[in-house]
Length: 160
Image 1 (cartoon, helix red, strand yellow):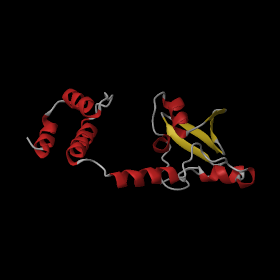
Image 2 (cartoon, rainbow, N blue to C red):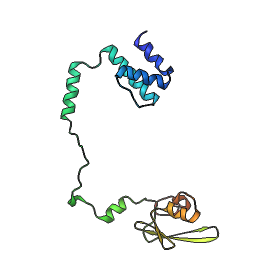
Image 3 (cartoon, rainbow, N blue to C red):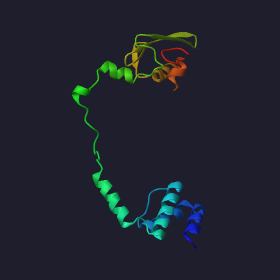
Image 4 (cartoon, rainbow, N blue to C red):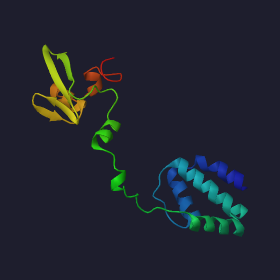
């Protein structure tokens, strides 16, 4: 049986058999159950073993590139002088569908008029501050729903 025939037969095997074959070819067990990943890895390993894998020159070049790589082990520290003002940062993360802070959203729901105030960070309804429109909608309806849809906010800065 040729390597091509063996690789062509792999998709017919159940995942358990693919994992056993992986352990035999790689010398260690795998916790992966993803059929596609196992098929790709097994096909690669079978071809590498049959064809000889990477040459010595290619291995040395790969090692050299790995040693020369500028690897970062932790995230860069933000510099104090590079910090943006709080107002600028808040506006960067603000959803464009929301009206400006201070705007009042009104909606009729089950025979009553709802009044919600848009704050810089959150929404006020009946004296309580909520982090999101969905949280306000949940407090009103008792079940989760999309706040933008509930208050009919679809386009930039307000109503559709």
